[in-house]
Length: 416
Image (tube, rainbow, N blue to C red):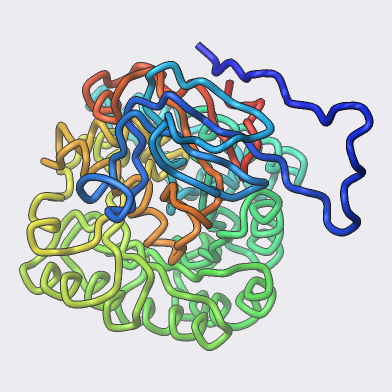
């Protein structure tokens, strides 16, 4: 069911002309909301700042007012939520959308218990290098729209399937057409042609490739893992990126125990992503630092691996984010609602914690305060659920509950 707007009000004939100056911004009130998740405890109950029988006013691209539905101010337009819930648009802080090719056979073999040695990430690298800009751009557009239909309004996009200076730079350009949250991941794996010379590849990633990519990105990332980049290599890559103004993020401790989390905290990385295999020292480091632990349960679901222990992190006071980790190999899903349900079922999060992690937690992982919340001054990014409560995201897994999405105050036509 889509929201039904009331007719616009019109200035009567003969009314005084508007004063000169900037045009007034259009206003919309979404009223009759059963439960409004604001993520602002000053506005409502608990960490979610939950407001019952609520309304929210959008002015231009920002939230202008939040409060009881029966006290909503006059606006140009009204949308009746009809007793349904509204949450902030999801904030996806980890995705790999610039790619070509298909790894269905790899997934099928893994799920069938058969060995498969066709190349993994290298398969995608070969296909991405061979693809035109138009093909890559169409793939990103399709997946961004797919995520939008499921309530995601802010998304980070990484490079990492080109692994040459030219292919990494064009990947970032394609990503930047869809988001400001662009991440340079030249250090995804060692490029195939450097397989026997990993240090030479690190020199490329921290030298000419970085020179080309730094002006195109906000973040620098590295896959710190056995078979990818060790702690010393990761440190060199992240510090080189930081020297060029890029803020570190780290693929950390996904497949095994290792130095990734400790390195992320030491270097002040915005996030350590995966965090599946953690020592007590890793958890303590995250709890005492500013690095967000971004958990990616789609990867464990798609590889039948052990899920991260979110309960352990939350109980220690770590800030946790959720992301689908959309990529063609290990987590080919763009659905944040699916990951919310997985987090509750498999990672011992409460529904409230999972929704917070998928909204305000993702914003924290991107060091953003203007998204992931519905509070005056924030961006007007909202998702209307065809349910009376945000808890239904976990209670009704697999059901397409997102029925309308506003991005920057505009009802997204590709989400209804």
